[in-house]
Image 1: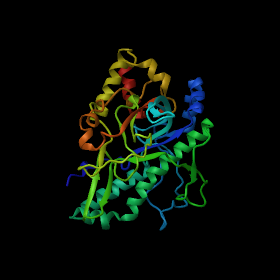
Image 2 (image 1 turned 90 degrees about the vertical axis):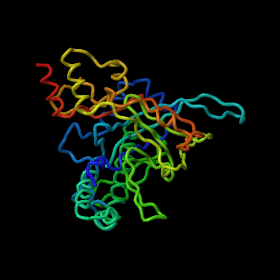
Image 3 (image 1 turned 180 degrees about the horizontal axis):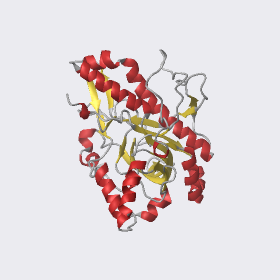
Image 4 (image 1 turned 90 degrees about the horizontal axis):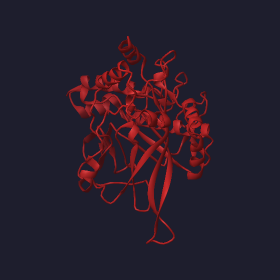
Length: 363
């Protein structure tokens, strides 16, 4: 089996909490201030490459963090993001035959488990090398605790970011719960109870068969209670809702009840970096520079150029097409799709090695 078949971004996904529309509209009256608060509230791997984002995979017998394994919640990869999104939708008014347009607002985090994903990936590859059978590699080499831990770590990281954003922005009404998997000696942070939480790049045991399902680029629409698809970061995300507006949508199809999470990639990281370098060398701004800077902010390493638009905002994916083309086969045809547009979002800035390469383009 080719080991590069499996992505390092284990259990990358989206957690979101719906917030009051009046509160969100008031915050957007001063978008620059909103972006500054978000940048201060959300940590990011790109601003300090030595910082541990996310919990470690290692834990005690009760799946709790170890005492010397304190960690920071934050954005853990270049494609991650966090912030305020809006979606225009149609909802029922006072009568079942009358509908009204309204705008819903969400605090959204797209991220993975951070450090735990790297730990899990190394352990997983070692287990595959050591066992002849795939089932043996998972059942005995990895074990059920590691699978529980990696999934839980991803959700903890995302929901802590949601809670951090709500606290920093003074948003009331976002339900939270204590982080029960943290060590008693650690600061007792709270995690948001998300409206929906989905993940991709995961492993799941099929209950009635001695088989494992590996999902790369798909979300589990059968059990997670929510369906999200993504394309380019600047294009926002797509949610699927029931006719009554509920986001706890489920699908049933012949593809393991899976639904597409991401669209086809058009540029590799190297190609995107060359695109940015070419624009910098020609003193050419981003194609949608004004709009991007109005709605996005980014963290960056100390003593770096904060003016460079991050790689994720240059467009590296096709527009999402599979869901609309194959909605019947995917079991999505009876659901309503909500386009969540970015209103104020923080993303990771360019990493130090990338900044160095782009700096050479200027010389």
